[in-house]
Image (cartoon, rainbow, N blue to C red; front, side):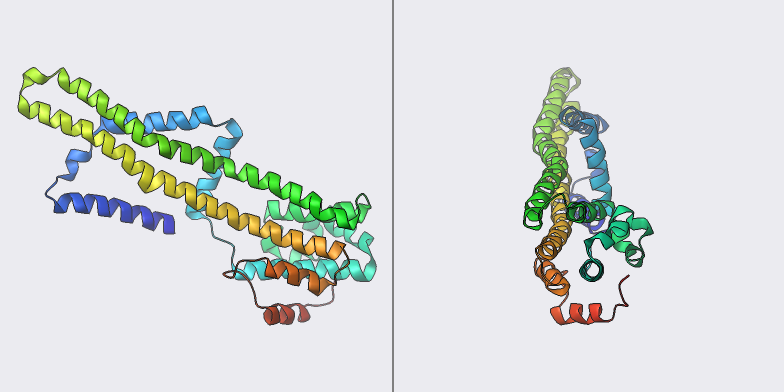
Length: 287
């Protein structure tokens, strides 16, 4: 929603300032310039991106425009889930976690926390983290390195759409110049039509330069930055899980493990220590 509000501010400020200076908004509606700039920009996007990255760009843009950022309550739910899982592992042994990690959608613990259950990537990261320890395929002190490697791969993959959008944004001013040059070429062919026609066509050509810069710095680059912030927010959730799981695997008590995870969170989404302690004390017995 904030992205749409920001876009309206950019649009209203540009058109409003132009009108206050005596300009006519209809002059800016040069369809040919829109076709050249937006079409070439789209072509740059397609040329630069593999198919799976194009799909991810669409997904990231939708999430940036209409998705909701993870809230403090959502992280509290995540920490409570981790606490319950760790309590089961501590009381009944790690083998007791097999049924929960093997099929979390049927797990009595996970079903109590739909915000985690419906977050596919976060759920996979948690299960993939604990499963090697449950199976005995890895030593507890090796788990953090394994999860760090997976997190690094996720972070690199998540940055691909950001890099592509920045490329498009950086290209648009140059594409605007191309559109302007095409307009000037068209203008030179109509000099005999008189100064009034020439003036109109020069104005149309300059609109191309304006449009390229405006779309780049008013929309595309800010959108890429918003996606980058969303990626950092997603990474924060993975780091929270990693801190808790790695700590528990090394022998930390369940609450100490989630306390490590809590302290790794940003202040904007971090529940208080006393608040978290009270929340886990009110949980029913883990099964």
